[in-house]
Image (cartoon, rainbow, N blue to C red; front, side, top):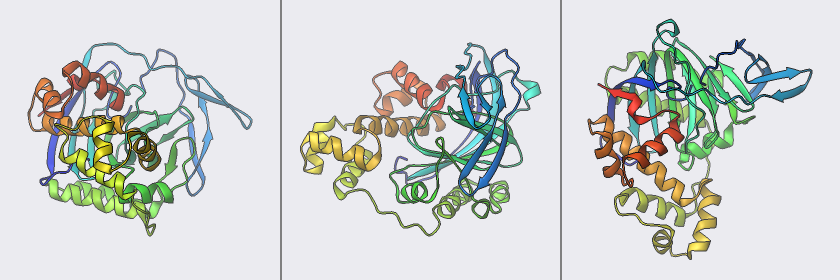
Amino acid sequence: MVRMAVIVRKVVAIAVPMAAIASPMAVSDRAISPPNFAVDQPGRIKRQFTHAGRLTAAGSKLHRNRAKPATTFAMELVARTRIVLWEGGSLWAVDARPEAERTIRSTDSHAHHALQIVISLGGTFRLSTADGSVENAPVVVAADVAHWFEAEGRVALAFVEPESRLGRAISERLDFEGGMARVPADVVGDFAAEVAAATDPEALAAAGRALHERMAGDVRAGLPDFRVRRVLAWAQDNLETAGGLAEAAAVAGLSPGRLRHLFVEQTGLPFKTYLLWLRMTRAVTAISAGASLTQAAHEAGFADSPHFSRTFRRMFGIAPASLQMT
């Protein structure tokens, strides 16, 4: 996440266009029976599907029916969320309204540059990728993996930047299958109670950071190449004026072609995409502080508000205008 000297807290009322929340699967008019989820060994997700609209299983062979989420344009209040951000991560404590009080059940399919940890805080959820679904069991979805998400009640979403020390350790420790991995029981611990007891942003951030540390365990992953670290720090400190790959290459002391290859190798994404992620987190921070979408877009370095809105929807599955902040 963008470097911040002060933790930002926001409470948002999410009013989503007919297809969304911070990661949930738009519901079609076909009947969908829930998939059965089980874990057969640490980090392994065993899929037993009876999910008519998404995935079905015949014996040991998995058949896919990738029905796209339906999209309409009505606005509806879906959830309230407390968010704290710090360098390298964030925690979203979501309280989604009962499904009986709303018609929207899910986000559009989307992907973002962060590992996403999902843990129930007493509520229910379903996290889905093209290869399977997980209901209610603590789970991590890998960075840049397309997914959609639906929830009811209180659920935590913790985001970890994959190039950070903890992000690299978590990626090394877990065994991802179909873009997802189970969260070990000892990692979850009393996390729900810790979040419930967090009455201020500092305490909420402390709970999120402690979760990230437990997720990493004893793994001591190496940091990215020092030249890539130099570019990462430069981009974060100069986001308003940061140019393209040629400027970043000069900072790294490499040719543009060499930096292009090295950056993807070390972070998993192109430099241009990383800049978009930084701009997105900067804009979210501005919106949480009360800026309009246009003000946030300009402050974060987007070309204009439509450019910001398109990028936001692609990364989070909803339009930024769907978030009513209070």
